[in-house]
Image (cartoon, rainbow, N blue to C red; front, top):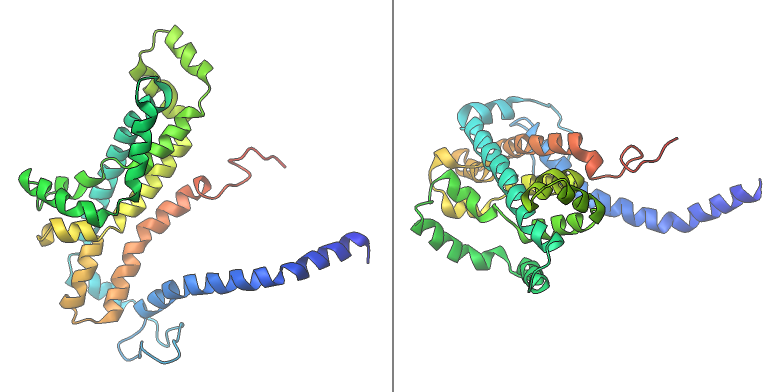
Amino acid sequence: MNKNSLKSSSNFLSNIPQFVVLIAIATLTVFPLLWLISTAFKSPTENIFQSVPQLLPAQPTFENFIKVWRNSRFDLYLWNSFLVSSITVILNLLFCSLAAFPLARLDFKGRDPIFWAIVGTTMIPFQITMIPLYILAVNLNLKNTYAGLIFPYVISAFGIFLLRQAFQSVPKEMEEAARMDGCSSVGIWWHVMLPAASPALITLAIFTFVAMWGDFLWPLVIVDKVELYTLPRGIASLASAFSEDWRLIAAGSAISMLPVFIVFIFLQRYIIPTEANIGVKG
């Protein structure tokens, strides 16, 4: 056995405690998801509250999914969540990029204090601002409307911070060349900054979509019409509709996760660095 092999073996043995800790954390993280999916496929005759959980259903069935889809307005919940999440993503990208551009590329008095004040708002929990937002929404007649579901999220401090950092990384030569060609500030924002910061825009779009898709608190407050329920709000209503049959609730939850998995599958290269998107060639 050569020295390189001995060194590799020694490194592997020294890393075993780290591997054990990581496997334990991964197991604790993934187990609730596996148990949810397992429960969704279990038949009514199986006990889902055993002292030792049984991950593999004894008699797998799609009956729970069919019953949830037929006996509730799940298609409406899906549509509402998709509509609200998609519009929120578009508006968030638009307004966050418009706010981030002058904070990154224009020189004006008070620019840095304004930026840090915006970033400081990220430390304020949503529960604190929820009541003023609710009063404002009611005064604007936005209760029980799609606009009411969307308006608190059309811009975010995190989005402004992320895009400002991305705009600052764009070479000044590109901006100067655009100005020499007669581009206005709006033209530079549209033709130079947005294409150059496309990875940051896609990242913000993913975060915003996932956050809106799983948002429960604000729809619970602002909407009380079934026709406007989003998926989290609709799934919560399943507990009463099906007398807390956890198999059906698990089936509904599993269906609601599919769009998030689809978004992750198609856009994972922007989340997890790969050889293709970091320029590494074999």
